[in-house]
Image 1 (cartoon, rainbow, N blue to C red):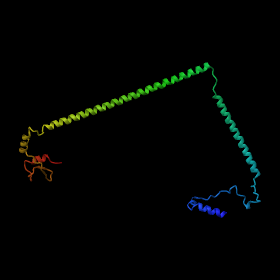
Image 2 (cartoon, rainbow, N blue to C red):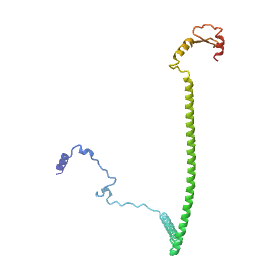
Image 3 (cartoon, rainbow, N blue to C red):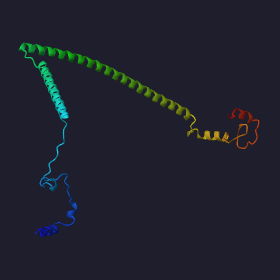
Image 4 (tube, helix red, strand yellow):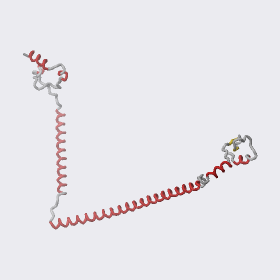
Length: 218
């Protein structure tokens, strides 16, 4: 019968289903197992205790319990004393009304002091904000004036330059002036750093020597 059950279990469970199984090893013997045969008729031997050491341990334990009991009673007494000191004292209606009036006066005084400090703080903040705004306005005004000055300077320079512009009216005159006064931008330098203007000049000439000395490159 057992073999039939095993064969049926093997047929129901495939090899892949057995891969997830894990054996459990008990740390101690389970409760439902009987005593081992080697333990039958075996009486455990008690560890001998020194009588003097036992008496000393009892004495120390009694001292410990006495001290803990004393500390506990002391703390209970302290708590009860504080509760008795902070307990609410019954007052008559007149005394309650006077106490409430006094509390309201103190609260009003506190509110007045806080309001005064708040007003002073807000006044300082407002003054600082006004100064900041004025500084920004001054800076903006200075930037605007600087921009206008630069624009006017640029306009003035362009007006001065426009006097030399070639227009339709002075076009022929400008052409004749350019033909009558040809400009040669070629120059040469010698070892003494003298400047000689002209395209065809190869040797210093009397006409160019003074000009060369004045335009000597340092």
